[in-house]
Image 1: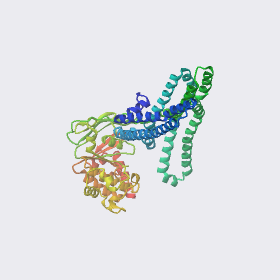
Image 2: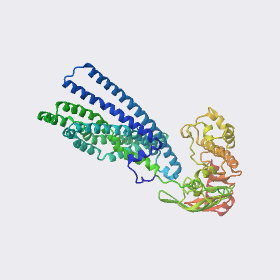
Image 3: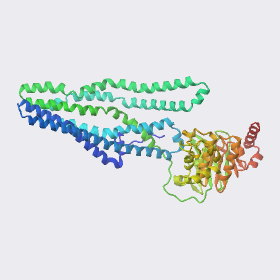
Image 4: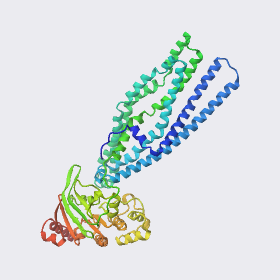
Length: 581
């Protein structure tokens, strides 16, 4: 799907996605800093109380006032934290929504082959789990890490103002703690990459296992298929277990050593007090403030896993956003008509050329068919004409204009494409047909269904046009899904209609219905049909025979039969099967 372009660091890239929400993040950081400040302030008050006790102050009002202020600070800390978190999450969910929209819109601008090269499980992982993983960075690390990093720095700065020697003593555990922390971070990206790969494999296997459960049961492959699922589940689990096992010891030491400021503060401070160079009151103040450093440091360290995984997370998302697109202009001159011409078209899929100099003409308003053996390149030609891919060599023109110079939406408005595996969404039959033209009325939807020959079977469904078709149209037969797809194409009323194996799932009775539908689609339109059954295209104005990625022959049905070539063999085979049926 493309490789990452060199650019900003993962954190910088994530922050670059915040766009118009940056002001909300700024508010969130300010509120978080105030919240952490309120959580640290009581330590100063406690130090003041201890100093007062050491000085033998006995006024109850003095102590009660400070306790009341500490309670107020605690309440303010909770409120500031709540408002900060709410603000950052509100902005973050908006950013993640926009990011998902950008990713899904990007998929529509990418060549179909690049999208199909990725498994549905992998794309689902990126669009859902990986984008979700960015939430921690934006909603928590940005405000909370920033604020909790400032708090210990401010406390240490204050300790240095009291006694620079004690300030250095407070930092004694930092180098060793940082060493353990860095040691823990080593290899983190590799471990996380393994978890990503293993999780993808598990998702793909789960999707395949569920989708192919019928085949698994029919052919008795339950054990082997389940064993594969168990293996991938084991690998996914142990990718995390091995990661945690490698990290747990250095992480534990880092968490123990880094905040353990008392290890150095108490003995060094005691010696300084004994020598008379540090007052007992200042020593007690420093002890209390050093304890206040611990909580913010632990909070900062708790985000270590998020820093380790950020590179992989961002890389997964950027693989989509930075992938090459099908380049189309924002505006261009409209084509002169709806005639199509392929001139010396070459196309490669996964570095293997599958079309070798294909040339053909589709006059406006004509009915042109593409036939040939399975794997000959018929569907590839159809997808290139539908602008789902770009040619590698040669050109495809519409009304004399190269389709690469026509805006994508303008070209899409002129073409209705019905593939052999057309997708139906888990919506009602009516709404699936209405996708052809979202502003169509119910009457127009039903008229399109009548013209495509599926009105009667729709009325026979449990709730008629309001029947849910199920995931991928699973509640309908293949032939029913195909006829609804044709109705959708009819409703779109595009001047160019491409039918890729439109009768692949139909029985002979329904084939006649499809043929009548095709005849109605033909009127006044440019029609391109990739034929599964040759009997559906005998009336085509021109039939192109595709073989091994090249045009082997062309002509009308009668002309091709007279050529006594591949088409005649295919026709005889088709008639023999039809007679035997």
